[in-house]
Length: 227
Length: 193
Image 1: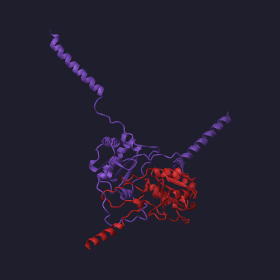
Image 2: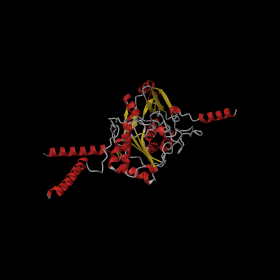
Image 3: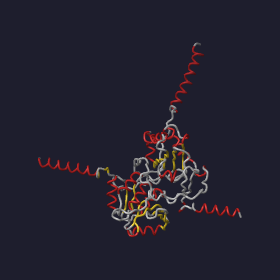
């Protein structure tokens, strides 16, 4: 019996030690090497571009973190927050956004499905979700007009092109790295059907029939019941 | 005569704007919208985000680290990339890099068996990857791979991409230990099309 207890104790200690070492390496939570590579090239993109000091930008980011529908959508797409002071904004996006903050929704090929900036952005998380859902539905129901057709073509470079920064600033003061997104195979995002504020159709029909029937009965009684 | 002069001036002013390999990137903040027909290479790392190779304290090149730093930046992990630049240097092997990734909590995947599906996946998902060349003595970034062509970004000269036939790249890579590695995060969104 003693031996059995001793063996159990040893087993528990080994298990505990293994768990500790598996979870932490040098005090840093270790993520395992990814074995099953995510086949996520079909995922769509949502970019939120703005100044970290802007309250509107922070609000939009908060929507994607707190609103259940937007949070779910965020995990279905490749979510790319881009800050005004980042190098990637200056080199890739500054010349193709029309205002700040900007929310841009692109399919996996980069075609812009929806884009709104500044005052044109919806006022609520629900409004933004609805706008994204509607534009995705529109995009799927008709051929997508390329973004370029709706915008002025680029003019020639007015002067010598800028040279690369051979020694990038090691600490450009960018925002903290965003939380890693879940690793999964992803395709197009799925939107939940919009919730209507009206009562269900069957209830409205029932009420209509009951009202008409009730009215007719009252009228009939008033007309014929006394006789 | 005046028209000829104007045409010549225009020619000269536009000559410097020829981007490499269909790149249409002009860093002109708040200028007209930039549009592209198709972004090539697929992993179009801005020049300012590329990391040049440097010599470590053991007088060894740091091509593996430079490659990883560029990829981390491309995938939005700027702080991690900057910390990597400050912390690690010198030559590297698959097991050593895996240990460092584990220590830093970096999500990653690699092959050291020359599995072509890995590099196809890395480019298809727009993440890119580091691959060994020159018999395993050097690592560069694979930024594009299609049925005919591959495109490399060499950290010894980050100013331009280098396009080579796909078959040549794969043969070179396989003859160089077939090591390919990449972090797994969210790549930068494509330019609007």
